[in-house]
Image: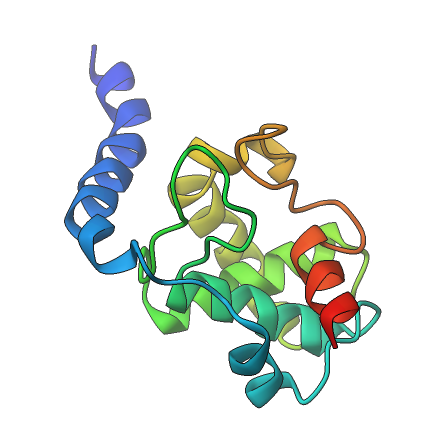
Length: 147
């Protein structure tokens, strides 16, 4: 019984965070201008650009793809934790993360906060949640084409 509760705890916390932030993120999305302000240009082969993009989506939310499930809510984790998750996700892309010492903690944060939508291993759920292992990320590729 305790094990079941411990396994469900991250999902419950995610749902609480999602429901409390949902009204704030209906209009929240990552737009080209915002990303370009922070990364100067979208380079799908740049490790730091990738990490900045991930941090931006986590911190500001996203509805760039208009998935039927609703936009990704902003601020599901702290900005510091967003950097750690981005470092972990960089390894899934084959990049050397800017802070290798954050990868292990980022992995734990990802599995505690993100797998409900992006699934184990970050593969997502086709048509509902993006695959974070796809190289280049579909969102970065879309923004690059709009440059």
